Image (cartoon, rainbow, N blue to C red):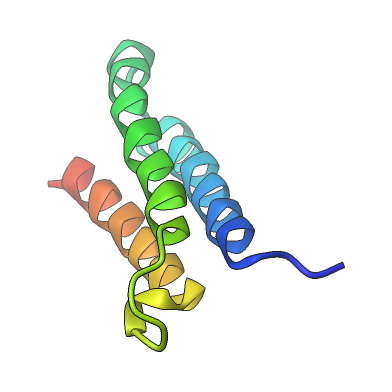
Length: 86
């Protein structure tokens, strides 16, 4: 069974969201009330990354590859964690 490109990006987004919540709650000890408020915004952000790659642009574009979107999702996850550290 092969996953479609959109499913690959969705899987990465889901794993990053779960990982983000685990890191913020258990490692950085962010209070639950702040985390529950912010997680709603993060769900919307990650959801957008699962929809945007499905709307394909030009064929052969660098934006047409799931690796590009996956790396972008991972980078955004790291930036969010860094924002809590500052």
